Length: 399
Image (cartoon, rainbow, N blue to C red; front, side, top):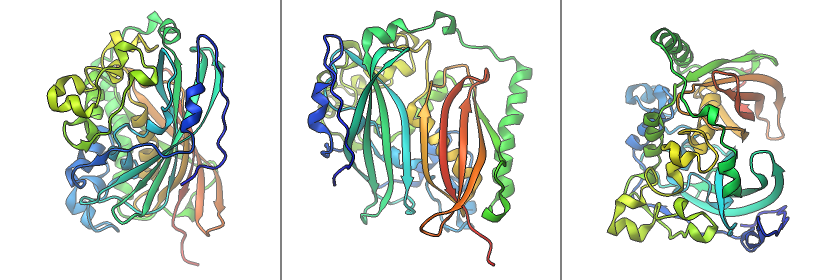
């Protein structure tokens, strides 16, 4: 499978060298595979970790009464079957002395859904990259790669085009704002208000139930209901981390990956998800504690890469986008495409607030009745964490 439209922009300086990337573009890279079929409890663990309280994905009686007739995975679920959260094809080639952050995702969904008993595979192909000057870290490489998720019958479930942000290690550490080191503190009254705001979105899911959300009834300018969750914490980030199958020992036939060869600094390389070391000393292969992912849970390491304190996962942020849109659409609707740009992570102590607005109604060339939605994700201060544009298919009433 080829990737059309590949762009190459090699920049080589003493401080920032991307020349090694070119050789990988458009060529499939190795993938890891599941050792056992996906299970219903994998689906339940995922939606629990993603704060997605949709009965369709964890309650067997409710799911049996749905159009699916059984427990079904949410549309955000394919990355659970991947060993790198979808980032691998967007992180190829050596950039010496560099760090990496997840910068965004674009998704296309083709219709097939995932159920317990399925086996999902991922074909991964690096797509393109460009180097830009940024305030955060100076010269920065924005690298993209494609993931093609298929089930055991070969049906294409989804395509994910991920963006990684790769930058000089010393520049990231220099960008940390010490004023953000301390987590905000929420008193009991504030937490009670948050609980009400959080439950309002869950009530929306209950109110819609198994009914259709009709395309005909939605108007341009309609506001999607607010979704709130948090405050985030090391505990909630850890729960998210453990919901990705790869982060439980032995679940995946891991490919061999040399993080140091990609240019990761010594303290951020190590043996994370190394298949050989996992058989010898699995403790040091766990990215929650060692390697590049430990910055999410430990402020000391977060500050090395430019984050002020513990912070959330980019792939989880992508799942929040999909779940928000799909939950509103209901079981008869479907997100067919979304493009999300991550501007900043969810930080420990902050909350996440999702909002959306219908900006267009259309019928595409395939006769699908679509809504275009602009989505924003922000924290309690109004700081934008993510923006996205998505197309959602809804059923149309019979004439």
